Image (cartoon, rainbow over all chains, first blue to last red; front, side, top):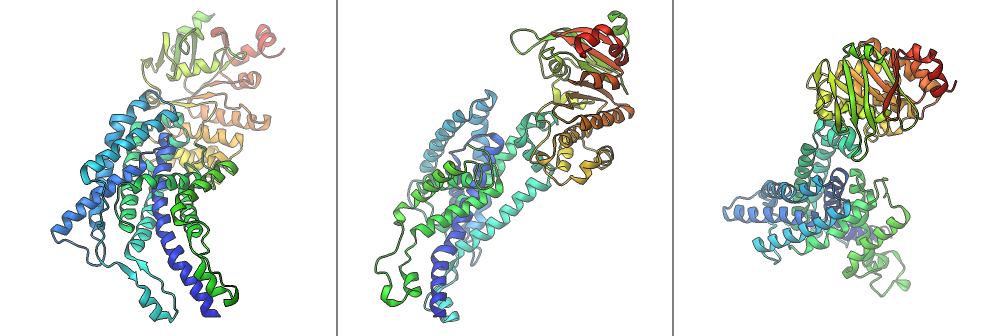
Length: 338
Length: 242
């Protein structure tokens, strides 16, 4: 009986908890970028998905080059070594786009909706650029050991019939996300520049009166956004595989995360990321085996016991988004409303 | 009477200011000014252009005519941020704190342009407003109206200004808090800082004022010491409710 419950728990951990933590971290990092741009520059940046893709592309290209030079990190993916290159690429892209496109709309003090449409344009432009450079195909760039914990080793260790596996990319994702989030919060709450960014986001006019230079704040926001995008994009690519198209699809869960958590609230973006990730996985998980362990054989289900087919997982974030906007438009952590 | 007053050189003066927001002028050859260690109060009925005059002095309004000078230097064409560097501090009427930042961070941001050590100034401000020291780790948005005004004044004092401009510092606070705020403002003036403020509570404000300007429709109507204005029958009748 106890082993049955343990087996059921391991099953859920293996197919929901572990992937959920990794996916949630990726969404959280993405949503942090969206929320940061929203709270300081006051617009919804639809190009964020493609910015992630661009950064990931930089990482992929550098990884290939490193692999051709036989440089590697041993058990860890070479992509970690290439990541700084991807980050620099994404930062350069963000600053370039801001200088050439967004700065004009800032000068003319355009409405948020105008910005939003402009960012959609930027999204398509970057998407096109990416397909020019690396093409639309699926690219695998993960190397090193595939698993931190193999299912078979886990079974042997515990004697359970269900195995728990943790992929290297999942472990790397979660650890990287923790480090990045800690650094970001330290920056925002402890450094003078970070505080001036929060001040600017709080009260633009008073920030000007206090001598805070808006252009500098904007530049720093793009640098951080670029870095976050590249990291989130690369980790996402490492976990699945790098395919430019998927970064268009991930935009919705990212926005849902930012809004569910409360737009403009960094803590909310992180919470929202995990809420969306776990909802998607719990709703699309097939509970047949879990119930098989927990219920007596007589009433064990014969169907898959899946609430929603995985094909519809994108709908989950959409439904949560609608529910939150209807019931609590400011999100969990009372951010601003879009 | 007006002429003889104008001849005295004041530390900060906005002289013969004419201007408005785009279209029609709100200020018509309006003059307000203040000396070091002095409290000057601008009063007048609603829509008299009191706040506009303050904004004009701080460079948030384009002047068609007139001049703003600090310590004899013409600063008419400087931006507000540049005026901060010249020693001016401004406390707007609304949205004058950073709500999600803590009290301490608000003060730090006030001193953003300073490169020197700010801990002494912050200690002085905590001496002046002891309640802020208690609530230093609390977001300014969670404080009461009166406490928030203290944060706003403290923020402006962090640059160690020579002139402090206050736009209706007592708007929306209770009479008791108002008295306390006025006491604090007098203390600030005693340290040698010039204080120029707009007030709705004309009587109480003129009581503590060294100088008072009564504006009507963007023009100077009366200019005198606070006590003289309070004693003036016409002023009392027209603006102070008898």
